[in-house]
Length: 256
Image (cartoon, rainbow, N blue to C red):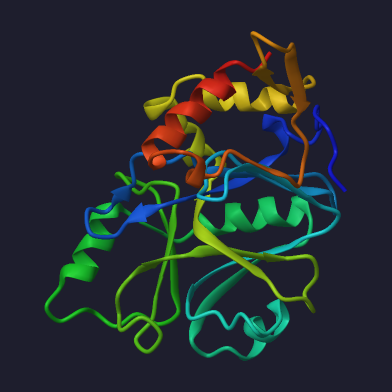
């Protein structure tokens, strides 16, 4: 059921990770995006804050969540656990079902690292060196903060971005999302492209936010509370995605 703001879970201390679009041709994070960020305390609740999407801005809260990252062909008709245990067409790394384990798993991923240039070199090689269920954290260059995976069979020795997959429980079907990024990578991206915007989004956790609609000259201003589990301002309402993005930026900067 939708819950009006403020949503106390939304604050930097509870931010576990993010998702981000990667351009695998230019090997950088795509411009013109607002990465989603994910929040959790204990074993729940868990919340995805999605500032920009073709279906609109939204905050989606779940009582519980299991989270992993993968690359390859996820079988949407099967459960999270079935894919994890029996899908031979994916590289998979389990992050956890609580904030402590997810944080620890992300820290552990950083122990095996490659630079952006090393990812590029592997993928550009005429005779690519064999990869064997290789999952690496990118610790330098334009892709810093992302995770890539590669394997002889599953990716033909290419490194591919690892994407977030999450479900209410391991025995349920999962939501597959965009490429994983650390919370620090998302903060850096926002700081470089949209200064202060991520801080403004945190106002969703601090005070009640509303959308004001001016009905003048024949009516008064109508205030619509912003709530979880609803979607606002889809791309179809605008001429194109760039116009949608510019409108939503103005909305977020109006938060108080």
